[in-house]
Image (cartoon, rainbow, N blue to C red; front, top):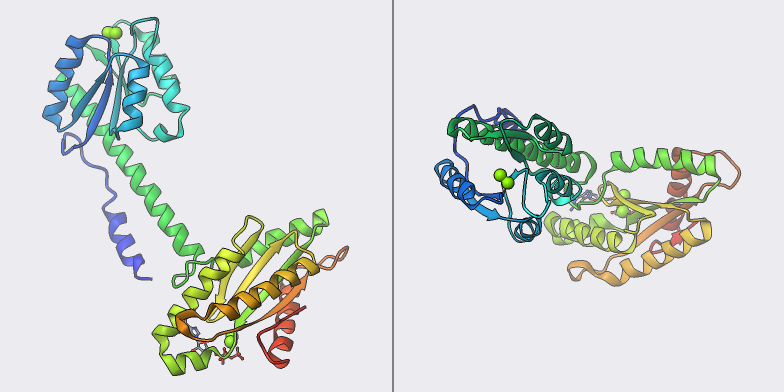
Length: 322
Ligand code: GH3
Ligand code: MG
Ligand code: MG
Ligand code: MG
Ligand code: MG
């Protein structure tokens, strides 16, 4: 919730940098077989605020790329030893580490084909030799601005995704995410006739923990329990969510009733031994599974697990009932 106003502010700040605003910093890499051209370019980039590393060969460039972070990669096209900047651009674009790094190809004025090839291989832009300072600055500025914009959007998207799918207190999936996921997994399991089970976990006498130790300690206990659930049911075929206050749901794909019950029994034991914040706690668990050969959906199986949970509470808590 606290994130939303800040998010809105930063969305307003997403207007790309205007043209000719050379507030650029960081490093650029230039693959160029002519030392004279490299030196001249270095001087130009310094005026822009970019520190330039120079490589003569693709191997040297790759080495530098492994050891440094670059805001921009520039490459000459015709290199020594039959190497070409086109090969270099292809190598870069095949490597996920450099998927977002802007590439500026530097070509001679008359080689139209090479410019097209450079763009087709994944260069973002090109500039022709002899390089005009103002043109170079403008192109670099635009490249770096749009890259930063994409990076910012990617971060915002990641944050929105977290907000939409995760529970704020525990970092587990939230109810909405698990419900949507469960709907899809139940459809799959019905179609493919595979096993699928649900656990509903409720902490015993949690109100007493709050009453005796305070709400803040209660929160810590919840976090600690959530971390343990994540450790014990965080495998690829297992999904843990915080469903409500002190209630958790685990979706177990490929688990029949027996396997699900075994896991639930282990969870009960582990949670009982945990003693989060030095407080004796336990949990009750209801287990239900998709009946083989019968079309059933999440709501129905969840309702059965919830009924089993109620029985577990009635029979004295700290137990799993299927
Ligand atoms: P039972 O064994 O029958 O489940 O008893 P219980 O006390 O756990 O169940 P009840 O539903 O009566 O109380 C649940 C308590 O959980 C009440 C509520 O204040 C507390 N709670 C819910 N969400 C949070 C939370 O985010 N943090 C803290 N500290 N407490 C919470
Ligand atoms: Mg050359
Ligand atoms: Mg050259
Ligand atoms: Mg409870
Ligand atoms: Mg409860």
